[in-house]
Amino acid sequence: MNIGIPKERRPFEFRVGLSPAGIEILTQAGHKVFVEHEAGVGAGFSDEEYEKAGARLAYSTEEAFGRADLLLKVARPLKEEMEWLRPGSILAGFLHLSSARQDKVDILLENKITSIAYEQIKAPDGTLPVLRPVSQIGGAMAAQIAARLLQNNWGGKGILMGGVPGVPPAEAIVLGAGVVGTYATQMFLGMGAHVTVLDHNLNSLQRIWDRFPNIVTKLSTRRNIERSVAYADVVVGAVLASGQRAPILVTREMVRSMKPRSVIMDVSIDEGGCIETSRPTSHEHPVYIEEGILHYCVPNMTGAVARTATHAFVN
Image 1 (tube, rainbow, N blue to C red):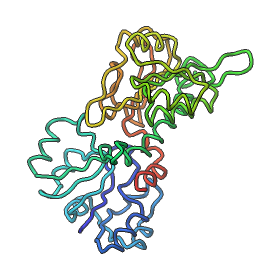
Image 2 (image 1 turned 90 degrees about the vertical axis):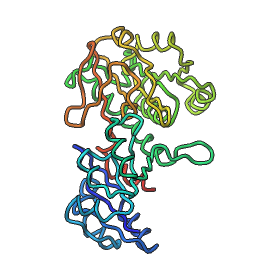
Image 3 (image 1 turned 30 degrees about the vertical axis):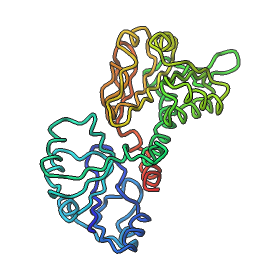
Protein backbone atom coordinates (compact mmCIF):
# COMPACT_ATOMS: atom_id res chain seq x y z
CA MET A 1 0.00 0.00 0.00
CA ASN A 2 1.12 3.57 -0.66
CA ILE A 3 0.84 5.61 2.53
CA GLY A 4 1.02 9.42 2.57
CA ILE A 5 2.08 11.63 5.50
CA PRO A 6 1.40 15.30 4.65
CA LYS A 7 2.56 18.33 6.60
CA GLU A 8 -0.30 19.68 8.69
CA ARG A 9 -1.54 22.99 7.29
CA ARG A 10 -3.84 24.17 10.08
CA PRO A 11 -2.36 27.12 11.98
CA PHE A 12 -0.32 26.10 15.04
CA GLU A 13 -0.73 22.37 14.33
CA PHE A 14 2.74 20.97 14.98
CA ARG A 15 1.86 17.29 15.26
CA VAL A 16 2.49 14.86 12.40
CA GLY A 17 0.61 11.77 11.22
CA LEU A 18 3.40 9.29 11.94
CA SER A 19 6.79 9.24 13.68
CA PRO A 20 9.92 7.71 12.12
CA ALA A 21 9.43 4.68 14.39
CA GLY A 22 6.00 4.12 12.86
CA ILE A 23 7.42 4.52 9.34
CA GLU A 24 10.00 1.82 10.08
CA ILE A 25 7.30 -0.66 11.10
CA LEU A 26 5.28 -0.02 7.91
CA THR A 27 8.20 -0.10 5.48
CA GLN A 28 9.50 -3.33 7.00
CA ALA A 29 6.04 -4.79 6.32
CA GLY A 30 6.47 -3.92 2.62
CA HIS A 31 4.50 -0.65 2.37
CA LYS A 32 5.74 2.48 0.61
CA VAL A 33 5.52 5.61 2.75
CA PHE A 34 5.70 9.12 1.28
CA VAL A 35 6.41 11.87 3.82
CA GLU A 36 6.06 15.50 2.83
CA HIS A 37 9.26 17.55 3.15
CA GLU A 38 9.55 18.97 6.72
CA ALA A 39 6.26 17.37 7.82
CA GLY A 40 7.78 16.36 11.16
CA VAL A 41 9.78 19.50 11.99
CA GLY A 42 7.25 20.81 14.53
CA ALA A 43 7.41 17.51 16.44
CA GLY A 44 11.21 17.38 16.24
CA PHE A 45 11.52 14.75 13.46
CA SER A 46 13.88 15.59 10.57
CA ASP A 47 13.58 14.49 6.93
CA GLU A 48 16.80 12.51 7.43
CA GLU A 49 15.22 10.49 10.27
CA TYR A 50 12.27 9.64 8.04
CA GLU A 51 14.54 8.60 5.16
CA LYS A 52 16.61 6.39 7.46
CA ALA A 53 13.35 4.73 8.56
CA GLY A 54 12.61 3.91 4.91
CA ALA A 55 10.31 6.77 3.85
CA ARG A 56 10.47 8.58 0.53
CA LEU A 57 10.21 12.37 0.59
CA ALA A 58 7.41 14.21 -1.20
CA TYR A 59 8.15 17.85 -1.95
CA SER A 60 4.56 19.14 -2.02
CA THR A 61 1.34 18.51 -0.12
CA GLU A 62 -0.39 17.62 -3.40
CA GLU A 63 2.16 14.86 -4.01
CA ALA A 64 1.75 13.42 -0.49
CA PHE A 65 -2.04 13.36 -1.02
CA GLY A 66 -1.89 12.19 -4.64
CA ARG A 67 0.35 9.16 -4.03
CA ALA A 68 -1.61 7.91 -1.04
CA ASP A 69 -3.94 4.93 -0.97
CA LEU A 70 -4.02 5.65 2.78
CA LEU A 71 -3.46 9.18 4.07
CA LEU A 72 -2.41 9.53 7.72
CA LYS A 73 -3.22 12.97 9.09
CA VAL A 74 -3.72 14.41 12.53
CA ALA A 75 -6.33 17.15 12.10
CA ARG A 76 -9.41 17.12 9.85
CA PRO A 77 -8.44 18.24 6.32
CA LEU A 78 -9.00 21.82 5.26
CA LYS A 79 -11.37 22.48 2.34
CA GLU A 80 -8.52 22.74 -0.19
CA GLU A 81 -6.90 19.59 1.17
CA MET A 82 -10.14 17.69 0.61
CA GLU A 83 -9.90 18.51 -3.09
CA TRP A 84 -6.50 16.75 -3.20
CA LEU A 85 -7.85 13.49 -1.78
CA ARG A 86 -7.91 10.73 -4.38
CA PRO A 87 -11.43 9.36 -4.91
CA GLY A 88 -11.74 5.97 -3.26
CA SER A 89 -8.73 6.48 -0.96
CA ILE A 90 -8.61 6.12 2.82
CA LEU A 91 -8.27 9.03 5.24
CA ALA A 92 -7.30 8.57 8.90
CA GLY A 93 -6.96 11.25 11.58
CA PHE A 94 -8.76 13.03 14.42
CA LEU A 95 -11.63 13.97 12.10
CA HIS A 96 -14.35 15.04 14.60
CA LEU A 97 -16.99 14.72 11.89
CA SER A 98 -19.84 15.11 14.39
CA SER A 99 -18.93 18.81 14.70
CA ALA A 100 -17.73 19.31 11.10
CA ARG A 101 -19.48 21.50 8.54
CA GLN A 102 -21.89 19.50 6.39
CA ASP A 103 -20.23 20.54 3.12
CA LYS A 104 -16.97 18.87 4.24
CA VAL A 105 -18.79 15.66 5.09
CA ASP A 106 -20.50 15.82 1.67
CA ILE A 107 -17.11 15.99 -0.12
CA LEU A 108 -15.96 12.84 1.68
CA LEU A 109 -19.18 11.05 0.74
CA GLU A 110 -19.16 12.20 -2.89
CA ASN A 111 -15.56 11.04 -3.40
CA LYS A 112 -16.19 7.75 -1.61
CA ILE A 113 -13.41 8.43 0.90
CA THR A 114 -13.18 5.77 3.61
CA SER A 115 -12.82 7.96 6.72
CA ILE A 116 -11.29 6.49 9.87
CA ALA A 117 -11.76 8.84 12.82
CA TYR A 118 -9.13 8.04 15.45
CA GLU A 119 -11.33 9.43 18.22
CA GLN A 120 -14.03 6.84 17.42
CA ILE A 121 -11.86 3.69 17.25
CA LYS A 122 -13.22 1.43 20.00
CA ALA A 123 -11.64 -1.55 21.71
CA PRO A 124 -13.87 -4.55 22.60
CA ASP A 125 -14.22 -3.22 26.17
CA GLY A 126 -15.66 0.06 24.85
CA THR A 127 -12.56 2.19 25.53
CA LEU A 128 -11.11 4.57 22.93
CA PRO A 129 -7.42 3.53 22.68
CA VAL A 130 -6.22 6.14 20.14
CA LEU A 131 -8.07 9.04 21.71
CA ARG A 132 -7.00 8.08 25.24
CA PRO A 133 -3.37 9.34 25.19
CA VAL A 134 -4.41 12.63 23.57
CA SER A 135 -7.11 13.02 26.24
CA GLN A 136 -4.52 12.33 28.95
CA ILE A 137 -2.31 15.11 27.57
CA GLY A 138 -5.27 17.47 27.15
CA GLY A 139 -6.37 16.97 30.75
CA ALA A 140 -2.88 17.62 32.11
CA MET A 141 -2.49 20.69 29.88
CA ALA A 142 -5.84 22.11 30.98
CA ALA A 143 -4.66 22.39 34.57
CA GLN A 144 -1.27 23.92 33.78
CA ILE A 145 -2.79 26.45 31.35
CA ALA A 146 -5.53 27.33 33.85
CA ALA A 147 -2.87 28.06 36.48
CA ARG A 148 -1.33 30.61 34.14
CA LEU A 149 -4.67 32.17 33.15
CA LEU A 150 -5.50 32.82 36.81
CA GLN A 151 -2.52 35.19 36.96
CA ASN A 152 -3.18 38.93 36.69
CA ASN A 153 -0.86 39.33 33.71
CA TRP A 154 -3.14 37.00 31.71
CA GLY A 155 -6.30 38.81 32.84
CA GLY A 156 -7.15 36.42 35.66
CA LYS A 157 -8.18 37.25 39.20
CA GLY A 158 -4.65 36.85 40.60
CA ILE A 159 -4.92 33.50 42.36
CA LEU A 160 -2.12 31.03 43.02
CA MET A 161 -3.52 27.59 42.25
CA GLY A 162 -2.30 25.97 45.48
CA GLY A 163 -2.62 28.97 47.79
CA VAL A 164 -0.23 29.47 50.72
CA PRO A 165 -0.59 29.01 54.48
CA GLY A 166 -3.47 31.22 55.58
CA VAL A 167 -4.77 31.70 52.02
CA PRO A 168 -7.04 29.03 50.48
CA PRO A 169 -6.24 27.36 47.12
CA ALA A 170 -8.19 27.79 43.89
CA GLU A 171 -11.52 26.03 43.45
CA ALA A 172 -11.34 23.81 40.35
CA ILE A 173 -14.56 22.28 38.99
CA VAL A 174 -14.13 19.41 36.52
CA LEU A 175 -17.16 18.39 34.44
CA GLY A 176 -16.62 14.76 33.47
CA ALA A 177 -14.78 11.92 35.22
CA GLY A 178 -13.42 10.32 32.06
CA VAL A 179 -9.83 10.35 30.85
CA VAL A 180 -9.56 14.15 30.40
CA GLY A 181 -11.25 14.77 33.74
CA THR A 182 -9.07 12.23 35.56
CA TYR A 183 -5.80 13.71 34.29
CA ALA A 184 -6.98 17.28 34.88
CA THR A 185 -7.88 16.27 38.45
CA GLN A 186 -4.49 14.66 38.98
CA MET A 187 -2.69 17.78 37.78
CA PHE A 188 -4.91 20.19 39.76
CA LEU A 189 -4.31 18.19 42.94
CA GLY A 190 -0.57 18.18 42.24
CA MET A 191 -0.71 21.98 42.13
CA GLY A 192 -2.60 22.09 45.43
CA ALA A 193 -6.05 23.12 44.16
CA HIS A 194 -9.33 22.10 45.79
CA VAL A 195 -11.08 19.91 43.20
CA THR A 196 -14.75 19.02 42.65
CA VAL A 197 -15.63 16.48 39.93
CA LEU A 198 -19.11 16.05 38.46
CA ASP A 199 -20.32 13.20 36.27
CA HIS A 200 -23.70 11.62 35.44
CA ASN A 201 -22.23 8.13 35.93
CA LEU A 202 -21.87 7.00 39.55
CA ASN A 203 -19.40 4.27 38.57
CA SER A 204 -17.11 6.90 37.02
CA LEU A 205 -17.35 9.01 40.18
CA GLN A 206 -16.52 5.93 42.26
CA ARG A 207 -13.42 5.21 40.16
CA ILE A 208 -12.05 8.74 40.35
CA TRP A 209 -12.83 9.03 44.08
CA ASP A 210 -11.06 5.70 44.77
CA ARG A 211 -8.01 7.11 43.01
CA PHE A 212 -8.16 10.61 44.54
CA PRO A 213 -10.00 10.41 47.89
CA ASN A 214 -9.28 14.09 48.68
CA ILE A 215 -11.61 15.38 45.96
CA VAL A 216 -15.32 16.22 46.20
CA THR A 217 -17.60 14.27 43.84
CA LYS A 218 -21.14 15.23 42.78
CA LEU A 219 -23.73 13.77 40.49
CA SER A 220 -23.99 15.90 37.36
CA THR A 221 -27.46 17.43 37.71
CA ARG A 222 -28.41 20.92 36.58
CA ARG A 223 -28.70 22.08 40.19
CA ASN A 224 -25.29 20.69 41.19
CA ILE A 225 -23.61 22.20 38.13
CA GLU A 226 -25.29 25.55 38.80
CA ARG A 227 -24.12 25.66 42.42
CA SER A 228 -20.59 24.43 41.68
CA VAL A 229 -19.93 26.81 38.80
CA ALA A 230 -21.00 29.78 40.95
CA TYR A 231 -18.08 29.35 43.38
CA ALA A 232 -15.49 28.09 40.85
CA ASP A 233 -12.22 29.81 40.04
CA VAL A 234 -11.68 27.35 37.16
CA VAL A 235 -14.23 25.25 35.27
CA VAL A 236 -12.94 22.49 32.98
CA GLY A 237 -15.38 21.03 30.44
CA ALA A 238 -14.24 17.42 29.91
CA VAL A 239 -17.36 15.85 28.42
CA LEU A 240 -17.36 13.28 25.60
CA ALA A 241 -20.34 11.71 23.82
CA SER A 242 -18.49 9.51 21.31
CA GLY A 243 -19.61 10.18 17.74
CA GLN A 244 -21.97 12.96 18.81
CA ARG A 245 -21.82 16.64 19.59
CA ALA A 246 -20.93 17.31 23.23
CA PRO A 247 -24.03 18.23 25.30
CA ILE A 248 -24.31 21.77 26.68
CA LEU A 249 -23.99 21.46 30.47
CA VAL A 250 -23.15 25.05 31.45
CA THR A 251 -25.61 27.68 30.21
CA ARG A 252 -24.90 31.35 29.61
CA GLU A 253 -26.92 32.11 32.73
CA MET A 254 -24.59 29.89 34.79
CA VAL A 255 -21.54 31.62 33.29
CA ARG A 256 -23.02 34.99 34.34
CA SER A 257 -23.22 33.69 37.92
CA MET A 258 -19.45 33.03 38.06
CA LYS A 259 -17.05 35.36 39.83
CA PRO A 260 -15.51 37.92 37.43
CA ARG A 261 -12.19 36.93 35.81
CA SER A 262 -12.65 33.25 36.60
CA VAL A 263 -11.47 30.78 33.95
CA ILE A 264 -13.33 28.36 31.67
CA MET A 265 -11.35 25.63 29.88
CA ASP A 266 -13.62 23.86 27.37
CA VAL A 267 -11.60 20.79 26.37
CA SER A 268 -14.75 19.44 24.66
CA ILE A 269 -14.61 22.24 22.06
CA ASP A 270 -13.40 19.89 19.29
CA GLU A 271 -16.74 18.10 19.68
CA GLY A 272 -18.71 21.36 19.73
CA GLY A 273 -18.11 22.35 23.38
CA CYS A 274 -20.11 21.70 26.55
CA ILE A 275 -20.42 25.35 27.64
CA GLU A 276 -22.92 27.65 25.91
CA THR A 277 -20.52 30.61 25.71
CA SER A 278 -17.67 28.57 24.17
CA ARG A 279 -16.39 29.11 20.64
CA PRO A 280 -13.20 27.74 19.04
CA THR A 281 -10.00 29.76 19.51
CA SER A 282 -6.41 29.20 18.35
CA HIS A 283 -2.96 28.99 19.93
CA GLU A 284 -2.28 32.45 18.49
CA HIS A 285 -5.34 33.99 20.19
CA PRO A 286 -6.34 31.36 22.76
CA VAL A 287 -8.41 33.43 25.17
CA TYR A 288 -11.45 35.69 24.94
CA ILE A 289 -13.69 37.25 27.58
CA GLU A 290 -17.43 36.55 27.59
CA GLU A 291 -19.74 37.57 30.47
CA GLY A 292 -16.60 38.74 32.34
CA ILE A 293 -15.08 35.22 32.28
CA LEU A 294 -11.85 34.15 30.56
CA HIS A 295 -12.54 31.37 28.02
CA TYR A 296 -9.82 29.07 26.65
CA CYS A 297 -11.24 26.89 23.84
CA VAL A 298 -8.41 25.69 21.59
CA PRO A 299 -9.52 22.54 19.68
CA ASN A 300 -5.99 21.29 18.97
CA MET A 301 -4.50 22.21 22.34
CA THR A 302 -2.23 19.13 22.31
CA GLY A 303 -0.68 20.44 19.08
CA ALA A 304 1.46 22.70 21.28
CA VAL A 305 3.20 19.64 22.76
CA ALA A 306 3.59 18.02 19.35
CA ARG A 307 6.41 15.59 20.08
CA THR A 308 4.74 14.07 23.14
CA ALA A 309 1.34 13.98 21.42
CA THR A 310 2.66 12.39 18.21
CA HIS A 311 4.57 9.66 20.08
CA ALA A 312 1.50 9.05 22.26
CA PHE A 313 -1.10 8.48 19.57
CA VAL A 314 1.30 6.62 17.25
CA ASN A 315 1.97 4.21 20.13
